Length: 112
Length: 115
Image: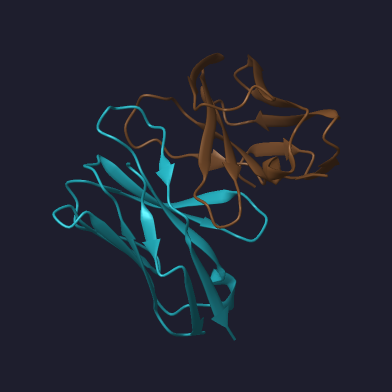
């Protein structure tokens, strides 16, 4: 299965701390994306990293990709209460079709 | 606001009812998707439409019937559902299907409860 698997399932931190979420997947990919979902809402795209990239930054977000270990991590620095949400990784496949496969997500709670 | 609008936001229906979910995208995208999100499970891809043609159907029961009359609108017709079909149904769109690295734009979803 192409499915990504996030770890941990839930994470609780204080405002100002960093949050790290991990994603593992099973087969080779072209791209890996991270999405965020606020409770009861749709998913919002955060960042995409290509298989030939090792690290990417966007504001307070830092994503790494290790294709040899088939894993990725999402780091949110200096977290805020507004970062409270579920975070999902999504992988595509080498077939070229962009139907993404999502994991179960990490639920992040940032307390003021 | 992602440019993808879903209605209704909430729906409660009995097992014998017929209802429809509607999705509209204002982004000029060519591909549209239905996903099902149940508690503690990964998002499940249900249907994919590309240029109004259904290109993927992931073994979804026939009590779910999609319709894509044009590239901006997508419907999911529901009939004789089961309680286990209760979930958040998400519509998404992307510029094209078949290009690597497509980002999906999601609607806010319809929270469906089947009694």
